[in-house]
Image (cartoon, rainbow, N blue to C red; front, side, top):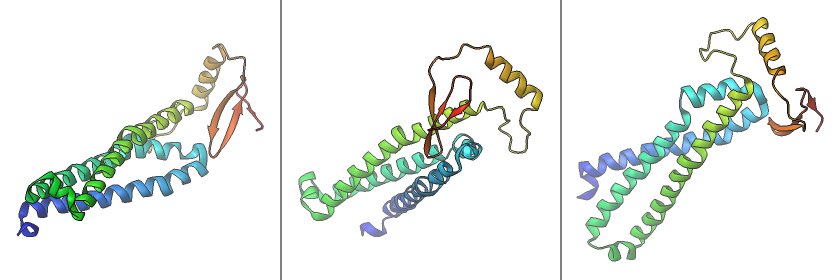
Amino acid sequence: MVATNPFMIVFRLLHIVAGVLWVGSAFLFVGFIGPAAAEVGPAAGPLLHVAVKERKVAKVITGLGITTVVAGWIIWLRDLNDFGSLSDWLGSHFGFVLTIGAVLATIAAFLGAYGVGRNVERLVDVGDAVAGLGRSTHPGAAGPDRASRGRDREAREDRPRPSAPRGGLHGNGAVLVDPDGSTLPT
């Protein structure tokens, strides 16, 4: 019997567990952590840096998605083989529904890996660059002292400045930054 075949048990278990973790972690990150970080604003930067850069949350979610999809396609191929032909497989309701699910999951994994995951990492890189990352990545380490922050500010003042105000995102709204570094009302 196919359902008790050890091959199918292992791959179904892998497919189901990875799928639950993939969807659950993506939902947690997109539904709660992202919006909470947006509400907190720049203070969420260190948390997102640790989650994305050190704990590699985007890569873990991507890995779970790829594992789910690969295990699902292996099961799909095994079931296709049991049906005998592609036309018989796609002609059955079971095969047709699993094929639609497999294609949609593959698209979702691809978009998650190459769209969302990479963009989250880039966004954290931009946040680190904007913050100057004058802090150590070690959680217990102190940031730069006042003297070094002053030297950094003086070094920045020597650089040429753009003549037009620059815009940037802050939390859920836009903030304009004047060339002298002060914020302008929106």
